Length: 125
Image (cartoon, rainbow, N blue to C red; front, side):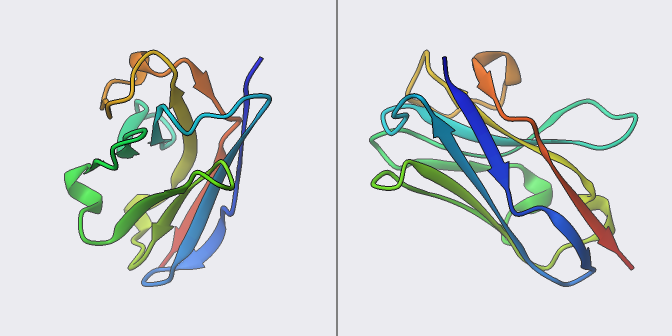
């Protein structure tokens, strides 16, 4: 059984920064693609960023390009999402997903087999 644990969320003013972390327990996921998604109240869960497994390919949703950076430290079995220049519209619960059926990044949440519990990010004016 794989559990993903996110951390690093919180309340920040617009223009500020946060770094989210995702650490799986019970399994090493360095060979698999990992993704960050977010869900705002009343909205569908949407893709934010993803990173491939052994070949480091990264993908970003248009709204976060140039502001967010996804990275992974396979030695620590941890994936990060550095979020800079945060905007109120970035407010959401952020989820980390593991794509254990493939090594390539996917924007489709149905391709991810394991999820964390989510961490709240709130950006105020």
